[in-house]
Length: 108
Image 1: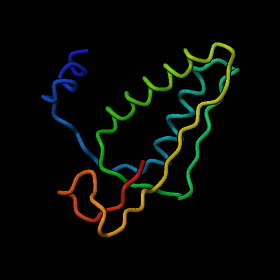
Image 2: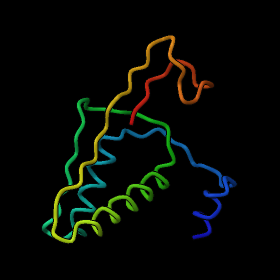
Image 3: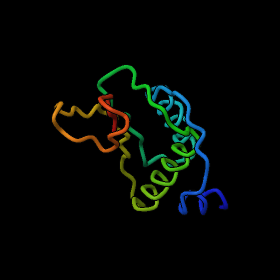
């Protein structure tokens, strides 16, 4: 709870590390699949085999957990949860969300 409050106030320190989102989400989906009701399925959707990003893996896992649990609560009759990854292509003249990073690949 303290970490979340600090995150909200932007005073926390991030532990950024390089991770590949595909195996990260595969492992995460397997873990969640065991905790969700049988009438809810998790679907992973990605075109590439690898999306390497710099991120605080604990924080992204917590954010995804919150989203998935909120989704579960919103679907009492069941359904599916889609976790998708895709590369965003910016044209050279387009402004990036964080200009200090320069021309890097972006993933959402």
